[in-house]
Length: 328
Image (tube, rainbow, N blue to C red; front, top):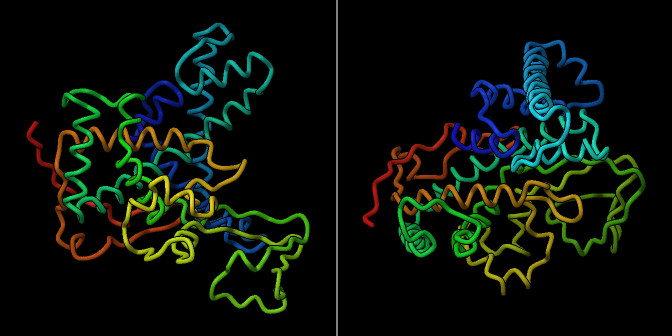
């Protein structure tokens, strides 16, 4: 709820009904099912109860966004008004003829659906890793005391720049626990040759491979799953070990730039990367400045929590924590 409110305020400038989170979860899960179905499968699932729930949830989300856009247009008399939320920025683009109102809604939907729970799940995994390493949690608390001299101070752009250890912990959490674990499915327009030097380990590609290249036929559907990429020992020694030092500048410079796929890579990487970083570091630094975290459930101390993965990868049953005030 808290992170969803923050995301909603950034995107549309106001809080949203919490029932919307359930609608978003419904649309994401059903969309993922349709992605992995064979051709025509989406027509069959449309007739099921899950398909009907999907359509109903999507209509409610679409209506909410339409209401937000129309209300803002009424407030501004149909013109653009400079605001700090995404909706204001997009409506400026609409007033300049760059985006249609439908495109404005599409962009809002992308940010709202993709951005609200991904950071929340990352923070859950991140907190679990910190509880396993009390020394690391204490080091982060010390760093936040320097960046945020008073307990009541909320993180700013300046203070976030001082949280280098927390930034590395966040990146390592995304490396070990990528919430977009399966990546995005793409279909190739043309036959493509991929050098075998890229190192696809343990996979028999039969007639599709030569000594130098892997041949991907036209119309092949491909996905680059970050969960697997982030466990490739060629780039990540001891991948199951949580080690924030992997993201020290000197280490990063020696690693292939596409080995880290938490936000994809290249010119079509995740548009919300900077927002996700600011949200995650702001919330976690504020928590660690004030509180010490410990696990409430002994089962979570004994082994990594079971995960659930449909569109995003998250702890299947959540993770419960105790929090205790830190002395100032």
